Length: 291
Image (cartoon, rainbow, N blue to C red; front, side, top):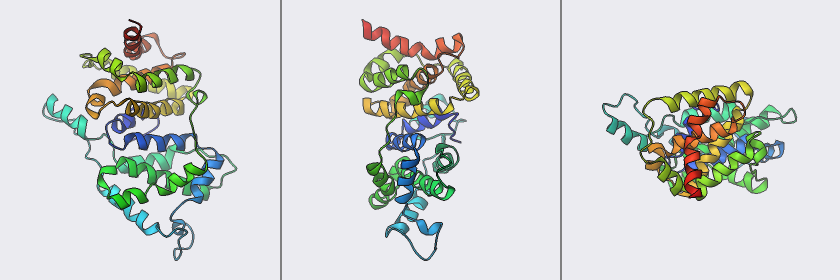
């Protein structure tokens, strides 16, 4: 299941999906949405009839949007089988399958993603969540939708973004926001440095997983879960901008980037051992760049 606490898992899937960067963009805007953007999303909703009069719709493409959602949900990417008979079979799955699905993505959008103020009524918030879910699903399941359906599903979101765009800032990423931005810029601008530094360094001991678990737990108890989740989503977009392929992401680049982002956000409170392990790829990249 996708959650903000385990956003690195969602990021791993998005980093390997054709529409993953776009889905990350949608989710990012939902995390950062202020009241004005929430209202803009709600105003563009294609299917007001679901919450108002069932006999009317506010937009002519409401039925098409519903069909698109149904098609995406029924054609979700196949989920990774972690009991694969060999390491080669598992690696093959890691390039082509996901850990979650459309249903878990929608559950995240409706349950955790959007935080509204007391000035936004629940009906408006519900409409906004629907619009975000439609756009995120369209990107996540882009290979499963026809051209017409793929265009219909995110149309309301696109209209809302045009009216009230949302852009992240270093402040949204916590006290070490500037450091996180530096990591993201490196992922986008220096992907080859990351690939060279990570050659032959795949962790098979479980140390990365233990360090990452500690960093996620630390984020939760310190109230920085949204900052770390935002960093993971921005890392997906940065890797796509840098041209990192699905195979490269699956072979270690995503884990390295996700660990560096998580550790950088939590650098002032995470233990030294976990920091050393998770930041090792970043130090290698910086060392290579200084040569």
